[in-house]
Length: 524
View 1 (cartoon, one colour):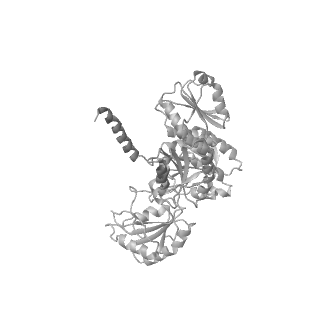
View 2: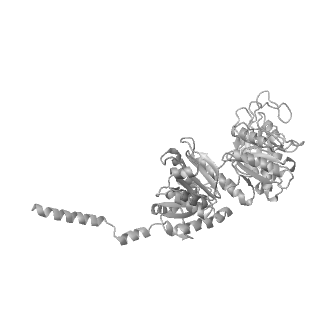
View 3: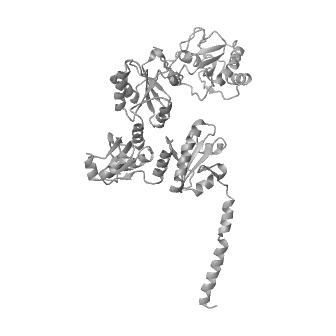
């Protein structure tokens, strides 16, 4: 065969081979139609396990809300989320909004470790690995700003003083980063931080003229409120971190001292500051003005480190927070610090609410020197006279950590319906073991007594403290029946006491001075 004929034949062969492997438009449509369908509701994709992969593959940026349909907070959240989806539908089609009702999708809830509701995560480029958490965003405008900053530039580049003034006047709050040049670590931290604070506009500049007009000589972050600078933070490479700056900037969305009420409670917990100090006082008292000014002065010194909250003790709707901190009328004015991560509470040692006392208390807490404040009821005179022994913070250790008896404890809350329903069964268990000298059946009101040695996951909560030196406390996870409690107790209890030990109900108590795990503070 002639050489000049080989090339056309080879081309014909390859063309036929490629055509055989090519999917026609009609075939592609049929193949796509077979994929799990995704319905929409108010511009939001209705996602579930069967269509989630498709949604990821077809969407560059997918912002997903994980919610519980019966949750009131999720319902209130939905309108703002849907409004943001509607506004971005035409403006940014590469960004899609979706929602997953985890009540019906337990596998997705487990995969993405959804603990609170609603939870929002951003999935990028079809990957289900390490989605970005969208925290503290609740308004439609904030959702739009947040997702735009995640998919594009997070700040505006400012080249003139006129541009800076326009940004400052555009909203109640604004932040501008003034830099000597735009290629350093501080700029990167600023840029990343702006992504997580959608509540206000951000700008940055390296213009010498703009810096001079605002009398800025070093790399500096400036917060403007209602057109005026309210905070300057000098930025040094390697000294600042994104989380620290985010905490600081977000505190400006609140007043220096924020009064706790239904409207502000959500905003207070949205600010990523884990240390809260609370002043409990009646706002109509004669001393309120002086106390408030002292409190406000101290707040300015610890901005970004501790969030200052005011609780009006005359407001009846604040009853649950009084109960949580165990604040009584005779205690006010009272000052407490709460660590949101550990749930530990701290009481200001001094009674007078002065700037000096507040400063000393806050600094002691931040330095790790403040002592945890644990409340305890007084020990009832007849605490051991009934089949069910009554424990409080002050006698808890001496009873449950002895080596002579196995102690089975019910941790309960008086207001809990589940607890009230189980108390009669617990009483019967006490009667059943009342004649046993090696076993104690007890209960403790956890709303009136702080116990740190035991993790309380829910109400009621049951824990067994076996006798013997090698004991390991055991959390009960069985059925809530008399038979199940009794069977568990028989299997786990140890009847052999340590040599030389005496009954904690009638003899020598063990010395726990080297082993104390719970510290209770006497009521003043």
